[in-house]
Structure formats: structure tokens, C-alpha cells
Length: 73
Image (cartoon, rainbow, N blue to C red; front, side, top):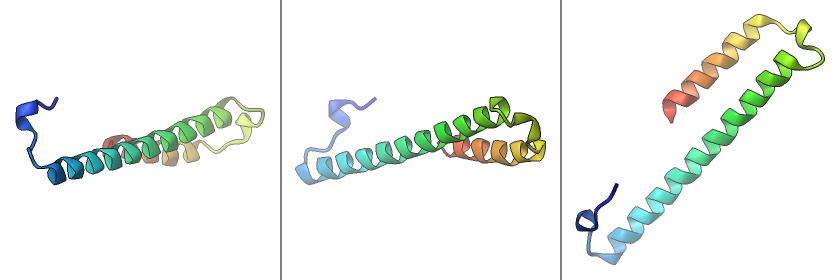
């Protein structure tokens, strides 16, 4: 948590900090959206009408993608 004493007094520096924080928030939202889509695809594959026809190896590959994305966050 930021303290008021830790913030710079210059307006330009404050604006730069705000822009950087907003960019991080957008990237985080994008990652969350991607992970939610992956989870939905897993659910569809596991519980959908054709779940018995899927190759289990595909789950391992997608799980690795999820673990990598989570580690990046």
C-alpha cells in the first residue's frame, strides 16, 4: 500500500505512476479473461456432450498453459 509520503511531489511523476498502474491493470484483466476462457474450454471438454471423445493428452498441454499464465500473474 502506498503512503502519501512515498509519492513524488512532481505532477509529471505522479501521472507516469498512474499511467503505469493503469497499464498493469489492463494486462492483468487480459490475463484473467484468457484464463477464464481456458477454464470454460476445459469445462466444456470435460462435461460437454462429446467429453468422452477427447484425448487426455490435450488436457496436459492446456494445463501447462494455465500454470504458465498463473505464474506470470
